[in-house]
Each structure stands twice: as C-alpha cells, then as structure tokens.
Length: 243
Length: 348
Ligand SMILES: Nc1ncnc2c1ncn2[C@@H]1O[C@H](COP(=O)(O)OP(=O)(O)OP(=O)(O)O)[C@@H](O)[C@H]1O
Ligand SMILES: [Mg+2]
Image 1 (cartoon, rainbow over the protein chains, first blue to last red):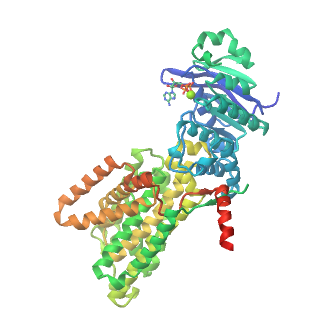
Image 2 (cartoon, each protein chain N blue to C red):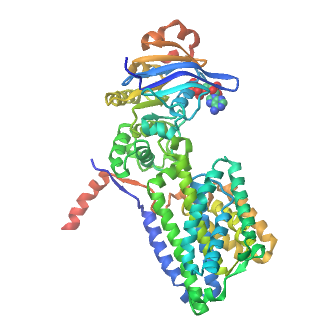
Image 3 (cartoon, rainbow over the protein chains, first blue to last red):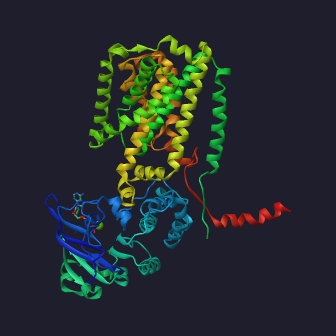
C-alpha cells in the first residue's frame, strides 16, 4: 500500500478527566473519502483539531504523506494542503463573503491575490453563495455560514479536506447538490474526511466509514455494513432514524 | 468569466472627496487660523496618528499594548539626542527616529510576545517604564529633569517664529496624512487581508494559512516606527522633553485608548471620529478640572455599554458606510450587462 496522505499514529488526548482520544490510529489513502460518525462528545472535532494543528495531542504522531507534522503550526499545515471547515462556523465577520475566500486563496493556497479572484467566484458559485459575494459575512444565516465554511476550505486548494458537519439543516435537494459537489472535488484528486450526523448523505459519498466512541474507533469498513453492525446499533441509537 | 473587483463604493467615493477637500482646507490653516488654532490642530493630528497606530495594533492585530508611550518617548529622545549631541536638524531626526524605533522594537517584541493576554499588556507597560527610567539616567540629555532644544537648532529650522510654526504645522499634517495613507495601503494589501482575518477570528485565520505570529510581529514593528516619528514631532513642537512627559502613560496611552475605543476599534475611521470627540470634550470641559476626567470616564462607559464597537462601528452596522475604500467588491457581470443598452443609447 502507498504511504497514506494523512495518518494518525497512536494519538492520545484528554481534557482533564475526559479521554477524547485513546491511542487512535487512522490512515487516509490518497484520493480516499472517509466518513466519521459517533455520538456527541465522542471526540470527532478534537481529532480534526489534532490533524489541523489547533489542538496539540498529549502523545502520538500526525503524519502527512509520511512526514511527521505533529509540531507543525496550523498555518503551515494549511498551506501544505490540509484544509478544514469548522463545525461552529467562524467567518471573518468584518469582511465580505468574497473577501473571506480571498484570504483562504491568498494564504492557504498561496496565490497572488489577483490570480485568485476567478477561482474564488467559481467556488462561491459551486457552493451557492455567488449572489451573496458582496454581503458582509456577519449578515449570513447559519446555513450560509456553513456553506461559507465549505467554500473557504475549498479555496485553500486542499489536498486533504476536513469537513465537520456541513450537511446539517440542508433540504433534500441541497443535500444532493452538496454530494455532487464533493464528488466533483474528489475527481480533482482531493482526499476527504467528513464528520457528519446526516448519515444518508455521508454513506452516499464515502468509501469507508469509521465509528468513534469514547475516543476510540469501535467499527470500521464498508459504510452500509458498518451502519448495520451490532456495535453501532448498541452505542448509537438516536440518529438512525435519519439513515 | 472574468471577475472584476473594485475597492471603491459610493460612500467611499464621497468619503475620499470629502477627505481631499478637508486636507486642502487644513493645509491652508496658517492663512485662516491663529497661532493657537495651529497648535490645537497639530495636537489633534498627533492624536489621530497615535490612535490610528494603536488601532492597527490592538484593533486589528489584537495586541493590546499599554506601553506605546515607550515609542513616543523614544522618538522624542532620539530627536533631542541627534539635535543636541550630533547637531542633526530636528526635521531629519524624525525619519531617523522611525528607523531606530523599528530596530529597538524587534528585541522588545521578541520579549513581550512571549507573554499572553493580560500579561502582554502588563509587559509592554513595564518595558515603557524601563525606557523612562533609562532616559532619566542620560545626564547629557538632562537626566530626570529633562532638557530644552538649543536656540541655535530651532532658528536653523526657519528664521522667524511664525514661519517655524507654519513649517511644524505642515509637517504635523503631512505626517498624519502619510501615516493614514500608509495604513490604508497596508490594509488593502495582502497583509491587510491577513490583519482583517486576524481581527475577525485568529483561529480561522491560522487554519486558512495566515501566519498569525509573523503578521503580529510585523505590525508591532511598523507601529513602533510610526509612533516614534509622531513622538519626535510632538516634542519638537514642545521644544522640551523630560522622561515624565515623554513616557507619560496617561497622555500617550490612556487618552489614545479612550479615543480608539469610543471611535471604534478595528475600523480605520474609528480613531479619527474618536479624536474629534475627545477634543470637543476636552475643549468644552477643560475648565472643570478633575471633573473633566470624570466625564471622559462616563462617556467611555456609556459608549461601551450602548455601542461596544464604538461610534463608527455603530455607523457601519446601521448604514454600511465606509469612508476609505477598503473592501473588495465583486463587480458582477449581470450588472455591467444591464448597463450595456444604456451605454448604447448614450453613444448615439
Ligand atoms: N478545549 C476543550 N477543553 C475542554 N474540553 C473540551 C475541549 N474541547 C472539547 N472538549 C470536550 O471533549 C469532548 C469531545 O469534544 P468534541 O468536540 O471533539 O466532540 P464531537 O465528537 O465533535 O462532538 P459533537 O458531535 O457534539 O460535535 C467533549 O466532552 C467536549 O466537551
Ligand atoms: Mg464536533
């Protein structure tokens, strides 16, 4: 097997008494699309923090294309190719929607500003925000803020895209559009890890599903099979109505 | 599809036109104002410049320094040192003060940047106190009691007192215009994008590739240089410096923070509005002594309670105005297409 594009090697993390990651291993193959589910507080978002560099792990290593990046600052990881969206959107509120993307393209993708404009509008168009390009991002509703999170992460021109609950609240139609968009992103060779509670959207667009519970992966494999597995049913009853 | 991006909006076009008219009128002040007016206006310019620089530091980069008096005083002492010890014209000493202050700010930044949050603020204040104590040790510059500029150097600027007043006034105006113009250019540049991103969310900025520490470091150095040049000019106009006056936390930081906060942090227009309000208050209430300081406190509390983003923040939220063309606006194709038929009839 090739070297994974992103890997966690025995990552542990605790906040006080709560263990949110207990010797977690994970390997994302190049071009792969991976889904993560797990109950609230399982430690999913924390894993993204560890991958993107905003949360330092207590022990273990983070590897990017085989290179140890455990101590690399987040900005450098982003320019290197790890793009991330935030579960609770963090727009640059004092800037327009378009400028939000220009920041990501200029710094995350390292583009010259003028060269980035066209691509930024293209991404806004794909994410359904083109008509709001000049709006102040503070004035956006929650759904549009989530769209902006996705758009901004795409504008960093990632090799690995970390998506944290971007489908919640979308209509069926919008959800289909999102799945299509992510398929197109994958065709460009981007590897994806997607944390999502909207299980049917997830299952429709991933190769492999992982289930996180109390800071450890308790099931892994074919999405359909994992969803039906007894482990999942046991710890994870609430959201199955969705799938 | 080609994407056109413009900075100007209608309000910023009006704003820039008003600015141009204002600058011309102010440049002509020696011809319509008296000596006192020039002195007052020079002081206003100095505060606009200091507050704008502090706003860049605290409002954009999130570096809440309460020690910028270190650089005001440093600028003043550099000017007096060059003038008195080396005989260099005070006018030349102003840019030199900027360069040297930038050099001094580098090790200071490496020191205070190790501190976080409140500790950073306290650290900057301690550095300024150390500077003040050091200045009091320089006996050739008057030690603790300070020193005046020798008459010969003053006369070298211009032979008559009136012409000297004019020249100093114009330099004060030029300095604030240049500082504001540079801040505007900085904010429009790549660094400006980074700064605005940091202002709005440090976490999101860093996860979108912005090197937050490096940007903050640069801003700290740049504001130190600007602050020192303003400091040099202030004390050139006063003709006298002393450690307590030059490194005054009250004059060069407390009032400056008041101005920036009531005007609106993180907005280039904020410190200008804030300075106007501060001087209106000062000129109308100055006779009341301590009561005046009390009133400043009351105004600050009222503004913070009713308009936490300052007075300009309120204007932006309500009306969306921007005086300075800072925001990239996409000029949408549909709009230019809609305008096309009109252009055709115009051409007839
Ligand atoms: N900075 C922090 N300090 C202390 N505790 C934290 C911190 N961040 C997260 N936690 C705790 O760690 C646990 C895991 O949080 P995390 O956000 O990773 O969960 P999650 O799986 O993303 O949950 P959700 O599905 O609700 O988004 C939670 O109990 C949370 O309260
Ligand atoms: Mg989460």
